[in-house]
Structures are given as structure tokens and as C-alpha cells.
Length: 434
Image (cartoon, rainbow, N blue to C red):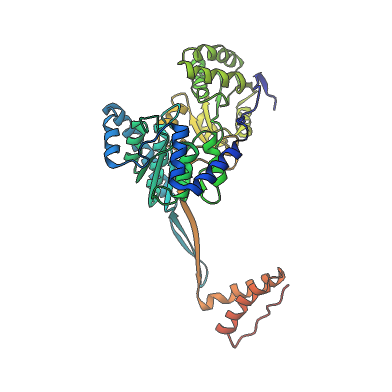
């Protein structure tokens, strides 16, 4: 397939903050050793905050009173969508029991994690939607305890809308801690809270690295990089909508890739003309982020046909994949590698980011080749069980003994042998390997 690049990225999306790993590991080690007080010291150092860490019911209610009724209604609208979608996801998995052979019975159980830690960024932007997506899904999954955590602002605490959202969605406790110290508090069970079995939610490179280091001791949703978005378009697409959708995703940050692949060169050329103009209409900080992302990370490609569009999408495996082309059903059936798919001009990635329902915590940096995003399933363990009757054990014991001896695992073989000897003392079995 021929790809004609009208614009190619000047650099790859990488974290360039120096030795983040060493910095984060040192902080985690100090907080694990020093407990609550060490976490408080880092809150004072990085967040410039020395207030209450575990919010009281009075503090939660006081924060909620600061949220306008209009915003509360919007949050409830989004919460209803996220919760309903998560409930539908949960209904897609169930406990099973199957008799594989007479007397040999096996099964599956879906068991939620006991404790979940949900991080909602609150630095440059107040990520209400992150609290929605993480806490709601943990609650629907059935987690026994949910801790929500978000960075406090100096002398003010967590943004009131995040507090209201986390409480509405079912958080049992809300921590006013940001960054590595927040992740550490949930992982290590500080401030009298249970240790989290799984940590979820987006964050900056320090949050992401803390989750990466802790993975294994706790579960995590995924290894997250900068957010990314790809639009597939044909001659039916509106260049103004395409341009704004690219700009809207580019404002996430200087290192957030955005791509446009199209079968229609005039569309690509018009979009490239419009994007800088629309970036200039954003507030200053948003414009700076979007301009840097467009300059350094964006690519615009022209391909021969819609199969070429699909091949580009599967090659990039974007976090967000938006189809603005005819016959969206064809794309739905053909596309394979994406975090979340947006079909048609009428939707947009921002809908999914904020309030449409499917989760916005999604795989980045090409990870959509092998994994999906956050869902109720991430909080649930699919575990198996088995039992066998004495008569049913005969065939499986014979098979196990012979396979084990062929592998050189005599101890395994003897565990089968002894059952055959006990249950079938009058029978003779050939249990030699091969």
C-alpha cells in the first residue's frame, strides 16, 4: 500500500523528563518506609498542601455544595451513561459450570477485587470524567472498597466537582493527594485504608511510572503513555469538523499524537490549512499544547482507498479511532486495533472522553494491538475450579501420570498413581511414559 505523507511527525511520542524511574522509585521507597507522615511531606512539597488528607463527610458535603446544579445534572447524566454501559459489560460475563467428561466437572467464577484505588488528575485540568470512569466501573464490578484520589490545590484542596463526582459514583474514601504520593498511599494502604488490589486512572509521567513500578505487587489498568487519536476520512467528511476534532485532541499536551488518514487529498489540504487557525482560537495554554502537538507529533496521510485507511488504523493501533467516512458498518466490521471506535461525524472523541458511556481509560502507544481499555472486567478475576468423581478420576489420572512421566515430573505422576491405587485396587494400569 502506498501512503502519501502530506505532513510527517518530527519526533516520536516519548517521555523526556530525565530519569523519572529513579525519582519515582526513591519517593515510593521513602513513603513505604515512612508511612503517612512521608506522604504528607510530599504533599506539602509537591502540592503545597497541608490540609486534611482523608476527606470527612462534612468536607465532602461542603465541596459538593460549591458545585452548581447545572454541573451536577451534567455529571449525573454522564454517570448514568457510564454506569449503564458498565452494567451491560458486567452482564456479558458469568459463572459457568461444565461437565467435560462423565464425572469431570470444571467451572469459572468472576470475583471482583476487594479494594480498588482510582486516580483522577487535578493539576492543569480538573478531570471530572476520570473520576466518573474509574469509580463507577469499580462500583459496578462489586469491589468491596473504593478509594478515590486526586491532587489538592494549594490551600484549597481537591476541586469540588471531582469530590462531588467521586462521592456520587460510590467512592468509600477520597484522598487529597496527588502524584506519586497519592499512588503510594493507595498501594500501601496508608491513612488507615485498605491496600488497593488494583490501581486505575490516568496521570502524568510520574503517576504512570509509579504504577509501572508497583505492577505485580498490585494490578494496574495499563501502562499509559500520552493520549493519541486517529481520524479516517473520505470525500464525504467535513474539513471543519475534522480539523476541530484534531485540535480538540491535540490540546491534551505537547506530546499527544494526532493523525489524519484520508482518501481525499483536497480534504487533507483544507484540514491542514484550518488546524493552525483553530488552534489560535484556543485559550493560551491550550493553544500552546495543541500547537506543539500539531507541529511535532501530527501526521496527515493520503491513501488510495478505504482498505488503505483500515490498514493505516491497524498499523497505528490508536487509542481513539474516529471514522468520518461513508459506510461506517464496513469499518466497524473491518477495523481491529483501537482502544475505542467512534463511528460517523455525529459523534466525537470528546463525547467518549466525558459522558457518552464507554470508558475513556484506553490503551495508548500502540497497545491497542493486544488490549482494550478499562472496564468492569479489569476489576474482576476470572478464576476456575474443578472437581471429579472417583469414577471420573480414572481416565484423567491415567493421562496425568503418563504425561507427567514423559515430562520427567515423577512427583506429579505419583499424585495420580496413589488415587488409582486407592480407588481402583483391583485394576491394573499402564502408567509408563510413552
